[in-house]
Length: 126
Image (cartoon, rainbow, N blue to C red; front, side, top):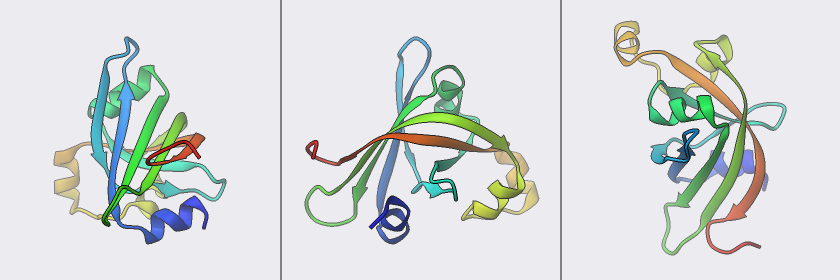
């Protein structure tokens, strides 16, 4: 099973870890990633700390823990390759659609696209 199928069919909790240009680390809960036709991975982000960190340091790690007994999941090491703000593709891919006034309150959305540098199991280094 490829990564796109895995994330489409597996429930769990995702955590994105980023660091700023000085190495100060942040971790935040994120939805399952989206996969684009070119095989890249995308996350929809608001202008918060994780997004700010990616402006000065393009490297991130995404950890996914499956909703099941035991410790099963994925670790992905990522590098940001581009981003889009409020684009047509972002609007097509987002899973939640808020009314325009609620959307405006929450701020701009960004589709942040990454290449996957390394894929590892949750535990171990197969």
